[in-house]
Structure formats: structure tokens, C-alpha cells
Image (cartoon, rainbow, N blue to C red; front, top):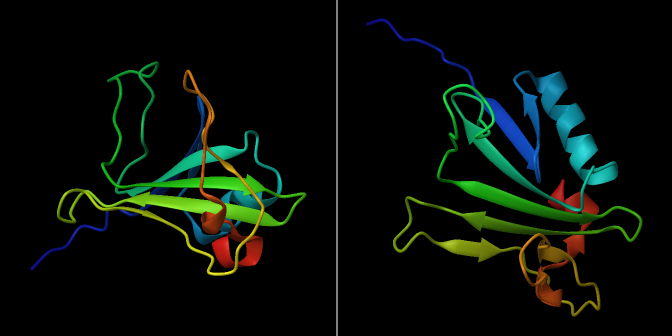
Length: 130
């Protein structure tokens, strides 16, 4: 039996800027960028067998259905995660959860007609999000 290793590509999208990681070193750098120096406070992360593509690229828009949204406040030391699992019944949508009440609100959807924040209970320490 012959197998083909297509590899895994992690794509992080900061609004309209795409970052890719294909190797462990690139992944470490991408995670560092997301957690420490994000170009925007919220990014979407996709893990797939190929890079995601913008509608501006040849071949057009292409994204995996599973998505991790990451919101980071590096100066405050908090992050919040939101995951969509397309394979779960009803496309399960899950937020990170902190049982200790925090007063930290992080943006979930900052680019719509109205900004939407994560609930405060979704804020977790950066090291846990990492």
C-alpha cells in the first residue's frame, strides 16, 4: 500500500493578512506571533492539508470548515478561544471557559457593523491558550 503524506498547513488569518506554517519551527513562530505580537487582536486559525486562500488569490476563496478564532490581549495576559467543529452535530461551537470570573472582555467579532465581545468567562491566561 502506498501512502502520500500531503503535510499539514496551519493558516492564521488576521482580518485580510494570511500567515502560514508548515514546519514545527514555523508553527512555533506563528503561535508566538498570535500570542505576543498579533497584527490584529483577533485571528482565525485553520489546520488543513493545504493553505487557505483569499478571494484575491488565483483560484479564489478556499477555507476548511473547522475554525479556531483566537482573541489575544498580550499586554493584559489574557486570551479567548472559539472553535467551530463542522463534524459535530449541529456544527458545535465552543468557547474557552474560565470558571473564575474575570472582568476581561476580549473581542470576538470586531469587524462587523457592531463589535461583539467574548463573554468574560471565556478569558483564559495566555499560557493556557498557547
